[in-house]
Length: 314
Image 1 (cartoon, rainbow, N blue to C red):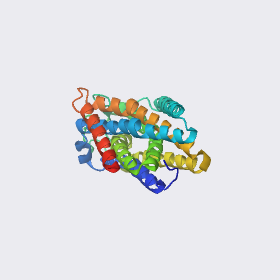
Image 2: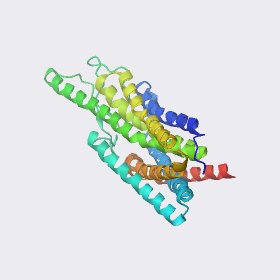
Image 3: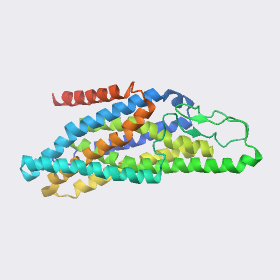
Image 4: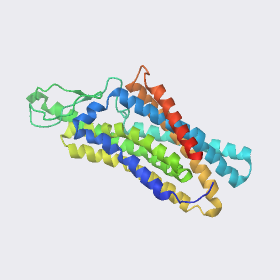
């Protein structure tokens, strides 16, 4: 495996595109039809597909490249396998610790439970809610009765809590997206076809995350632009992850490149596995508790990833 940065430009482009996909979900605050289309079954299938892609590429492609890089660096297959395995579980541990931090920042980071959270109506003129977003998916609007004088203070507190939830979710998603940017960038350096497929998978599951940030802030503040801005900002941590990966590889020097690649590939594989286990699959199964779509979509994602690798190697 060559240890160069020839594909760095493509890697950064894919990472930016995947990060900006949060804006697609955030656009729900402007277009009610986007929310209607984002049914629970569609989101469950998309998350399952993304999970299948990420699991397959982690175990079959990125871990193998980690082992290959270590084999070139230390010239011992057994030790190379042990080093790659250790880095993979190290990446899983790092992601577990990051998940604890995310949960501490936002205990409602799951975004939607099986029934969906209760979302208040946007703060607009009393008695009217022009083109307010519909309740789907999983969003339950409060009855449009207008606040009573004695309930005004309580309503303000609820709106403040709702807006805080949206902002906390934005920060949590930004932290959660950071390793995804690193993963996509490193995968693209190793194999552009893998990077493209992985970027698409990450973009798919970034869409509902954008909705999780934008909609609560919009309903609490009545500002579509504010909801969209914070959701967009939460996705921009992915290029930061890519930039750090670039700096690590760039500064490693020729003698250490293979070892650095081995460590990065192993850690990234572990991080991606834990993203699927901690985020994608639990969220997908909350949308689809009967598992009508999730498992089949996951297998389909693996098949698509395998087929793309076969096509690019023929």
